Image (tube, rainbow, N blue to C red; front, side):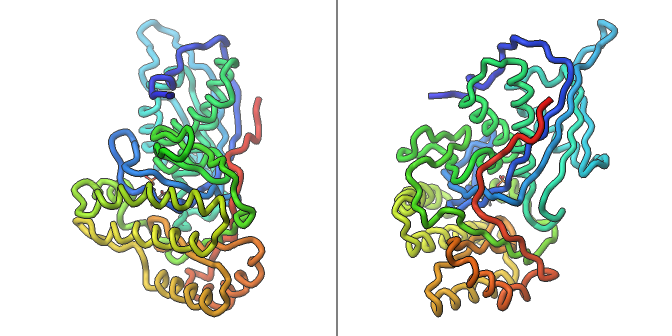
Length: 369
Ligand code: PMV
């Protein structure tokens, strides 16, 4: 089994002075939720997500070898400029600095270079859609492209595993944004090669009901989260229901595995909605307790339940760590569901905003030179 030390780069066959890459990486939406972690972003429970298609971060990484003129000058610091949509963005720098520090052990070549990191998202800034998963995944892919230049004999399998491993160290759920279309993170006995260290693509035969599965994201509240996910994860330590939750998640993943194979949408809905509400129940029962849902979140959930009861269309919802609602449904129910969203749900969205997305294929290389 692959271990952490296998990700320490120590073999470079090529000298590399400069270059740049552009990678895009998508956001992802968890169906079985990760909530609670151990040190170094090791998850307290297994999770499974749909990789999205349109909500992406696109990151350009330019790099050039640093020159140290005097012997006293050493590469003891990281050197990078950070741009957001082409403009310098100082407030993003500490997060990137922390990420580079965390991954340095595995990528000891980083301090040999000066980087220009230029990043943009395809979804509106501060829409309440977290860009940390797609952002960290896009940066990790770029860093792995650089490492592959230094060590061209690297296998594709190692390339993707280490990219997910590095992304995890940036933001846990980012490790699920490297590959598509369904990704499992966390060691689970029924999922081959699953690991706490990186995400793996779910490769069992997925039923055609889930082909191009739709996710319309209703932007209920675009404000800053009152409670960061870092703090939320922390509150799972000493949480009165944590032990039970950490047993429930792998059971739900087992059930979902069979459902994804057999296409039973009624059972799919039960697991997915229960997971969403359980995530928020954990928040509401931690100490201190907090609520991220808004009145409009609940109004939308009730509307979805009525619509489903009346039409028997298998539409369901899931939630992230926020008030926005992800509306999930099969592609062949797209027209009726979008009509329902326009007629009955848009009024609950901030400025009527929503994003139509669907299950996608993971990160993509856009430029290499
Ligand atoms: O990756 P983090 O540390 O931001 O945690 C994300 C946790 C949830 O989005 C709430 C659930 C998940 O599995 O993505």
